[in-house]
Each structure stands twice: as C-alpha cells, then as structure tokens.
Image (tube, rainbow, N blue to C red; front, side, top):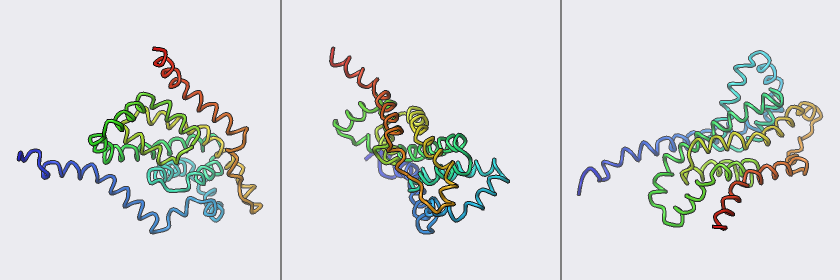
Length: 243
C-alpha cells in the first residue's frame, strides 16, 4: 500500500478539519452546563435592564461591539434566544442601530458556522455523495442566492439549519453571506422596532406580542419579497421547459 494515501497521511488533515467543529461543540456544551444560555431571554433583560441601560449610556461604542460579539456567538452556537437578543437590541440601541447590529452579528455567526460545517462535513459528504445528492446540490447551487434569500425572508426552517445545509451542498461563501445579510433585514427591523417600545411593556409587567410577524400587515410583505426572490428560479425553469 502507498503510505502517502494511508490513514497516517490523511489523519492530520481530518483532525484539522474537525478541530473547529469540536471546539464549537465544546463551547456549546459549556454554555449549557453553566446556564449562560439563560441570559438570552426576556426575563434576564427584565432583571438587568437598569444596569444594561446605564452601561449603554456610559459606553455606547463598547456596548455595541459587545452586543455584536454576543449575537455572533449565539448564532454560531445556535443557542435559542435570538429573538430575545433582537428585542433587547431594539430596547437598548433603538430600531435602526439595533437592526444594523443584529444583521452584522447574525451574518457573522452564520458565516462562522457555515465555514466550520463546510470544512468539517461538507467536503467529506460531497466526496461520498451519490448521484441523487450530487444532482440536488448542483440544482441548489445554481439558484442558491434566490433560495437562500427566500428562506431568510420567511423563516420556514430553523436559522441554524439554513446555515448548515448550504455548507453541505457547496454554496459559495459570498452568495451565502450576501443572501443572509439581505434576507434577515426585514425580520430584524420588525423585532428591533418592537424592542424599542419594550420598556413600557416591561414596566407594566406584561409580555410582548411575539406573534407580530405573523400579522398580515407584516407577513404578507415578507411573503411577497420571498416570491420576488424566487422569480429568477421560476424564469430559468420556464425557459428550460420551453426549450
């Protein structure tokens, strides 16, 4: 057997690919073991809002940077609580600045998870893929921007899943990042706006109406944007069908 192709030769390469994934899983386990994930909740915001408001007032730049880092980490680790973090951002920074910070943090976290998944799992999976999976991957890549933009605009599937699948199917990083950043703007804007008025809700001891995005006035425009995003796919298929 040629030693250059033996297990000893490929072992280090596999370990390098799997190391970021192992570190990510270890960090996720640590977060849940220490209960740190509970900080990304409305209850935590309710308890610490005076301290947070004071910190943002005294150190606006540092607090914005910390918020982006926290959102990036929460997204990369796929920790539940992105909605609470977005509401908190609107409450602390206002609608427009919070939307910008959320888009930056969520996109950065999604890209980080995408890169780890692509390195650790994507290449080995595609190397072993059968004709069916290879064909599906090719079709997805051909229309990746439209598909991803529609999935981001109307989050039918969990955010973490839409981060992983494109990585496994070989979607280019630039396409993934751009579709993610653009697609999450409307939803982020809606919830950041809701968060901007959260102070009055918390003072009354009430809970915010998190189903706002399902209201026709919000949902229908998002569905319309998603359909527009899919128009290029429909047009290409129509042209192909017409020969």
